[in-house]
Length: 216
Image (cartoon, rainbow, N blue to C red):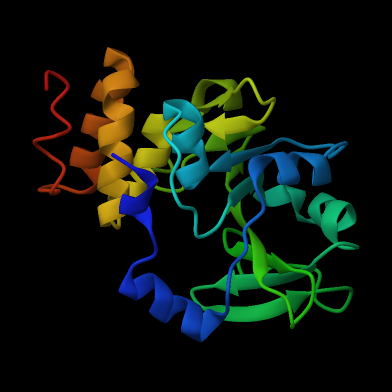
């Protein structure tokens, strides 16, 4: 499958009309800006699938992930470069000295240089329990960060494909199905079993059910 199959859809363009344009950073750009960040960070979403598969595709945004406790460090790292906006279900409020906390501990933080500029980073706040990664989809799933992420040859830490695909399963857009098809042949049996069981537990009757059969 080619990157053209993941070009923006009509829904994507309608979204941009409401919230503004995106010109996402690349993982290399983000890595340079995050150099010296004192806490864990990683990339999820489409860029994580691209890093795993090697298949280039269009990207509407870039998903930076940090733990929910890392917001002060994130402000210190990127606050001089970007305006940081808390996005909770489409409600926005700037994060600044007057409002230093996000609208919700597990909301998103969108970043742009100023109001005349496109958005460039979508930062998702990830829950943390006793210093370990906790799934936003299943709070009972807690793991060491090294078990749910990997470091690619470019030096960037990415979410493992099965973790990324679980997030994509909730929306199961056309581009998410493409990502699944590209990743599936490269995943281990363990990864395939995990994503199958997780999707069936959280999304019974999901359209991907047959494709996620570990024996497929």
